Image 1: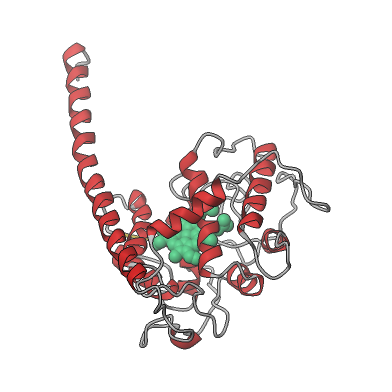
Image 2: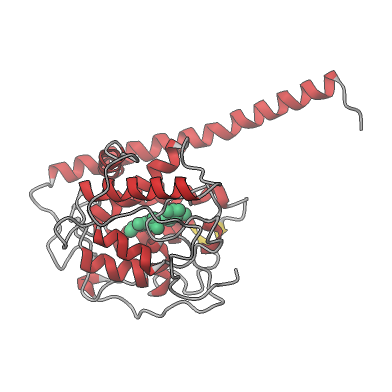
Length: 310
Ligand code: HEM
């Protein structure tokens, strides 16, 4: 093989073309998502006086209708699980395959739309983040989502950073307890509480993790705020429900989404709440009495569940 000016120029050209061709479908995906989202947002607006009735938030015939969820079975060591409580809970209830393997995008998007009352556009957008891990297969195992800085990032609410916890499949009870304790009124986590706890986590992870990688990544900070926004809107920030959902990755008995939009929670709504949280996060904030930044290098956290293999 020869390496010279012409082969290098050829390499640059082919890669540039490849990038260009790769961006076209991505742009198309983003445009169609937002067009559909605008459509669902307008329908929600038109029907704002007729939100789904309590007890009917999940469509009849779908798992979780009327708060009746399929049986919860905690994952076994051979099951594949992810850093995402939402997807893990769906697998733990058998709404997604219980082994968490070979999940297609359609399967994931439909499951999250129905279980969390999301608009089809938001369901597809959240699912779309997994395409980056697909490698042309058309499916993922839940454990694939562990990959750092694709979607999974540092300073999460329920898992220590991957530098200290290589397997992000299970929640850590101690971290969840700290999150829930951030509720100012003891029953709900408000927008202020989410911004406060996010700031606390970012500050302590930055201080104790030499491999901390969120500082200059707005997109991963935005993912973090996006997760907070989902828990705020879908669970109404309710501490009792979140304790079960985040620690056991299980739907509380009788639970249904608190958001009752006729056509589901939209991308625009989720983005608005995410930005409200993100732009109020201050990593240098004064801590509330009794709070401290924990050193992740010390074994402060107790993992719930067992280590898994895949
Ligand atoms: C197919 C769609 C989805 C994918 C691919 C996905 C993927 C992920 C990934 C990779 C993470 C790890 C981020 C981190 O490091 O903190 C995560 C976290 C999270 N996901 Fe999902 N997710 C999806 C849908 C959902 C839904 C519908 C919910 C609704 C409740 C949800 C709630 C969360 C929450 C609350 C976290 C934060 C956990 C933490 O900070 O410890 N996700 N998700």
